[in-house]
Length: 274
Image (cartoon, rainbow, N blue to C red; front, side, top):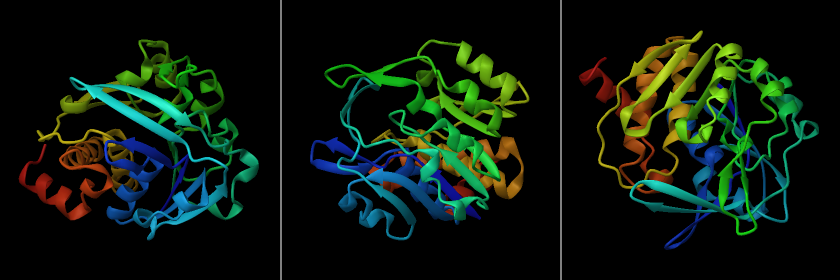
């Protein structure tokens, strides 16, 4: 399976220095560990695109003077996020024609960087994690939710939309509009698992209880794991459970290193079927 992911790789500021981050990074490593051939389309400084964690992944980098940089602060499980630097957008004109035959394309913006027109160019199974189209930041860099102004240009082209309640920012109209346009919508609910809406019909999917160490990237791991399994199986419910389990393992360690491989996830599911 050829899995393409579009969006910015990031530098994440941590107590010990910079770490590779972003939906693109977490989703790419997850898809690769689940057995997919992965291509990233991104913009960043050249040295960040050469990060060793991505060495087995094809990376199409449009060089930028900056790498998008985030700082995440957690207090009692609640994240406050700051943007410290922003790379240039990824435009439809940047789309490599050789990717038109991809099996899965995940649009994964973080800072409004993915041109909505990219959704019209991809083929195969098309999905999005829309958080980056639903946020802006103030003069101090603090991230806050905004309406998804480009939703009408993107939703009709999607097969799968994956987001969290936090992404909605209290605006339930986003979910209502998505349910009218997208065949599969998934709301992730952290430790409570997720809810799958298939043609608008909700099904709660149970979680795997985990020992949380670092929650960063859990939703990104979920998205990639779901899409790989769903492409292979066509089973929405089992794919969502597979993704819940994968995400739960990923938060039991720090950063990309904790993302599980497919064998670990399947071994758990065989012992704990739904």
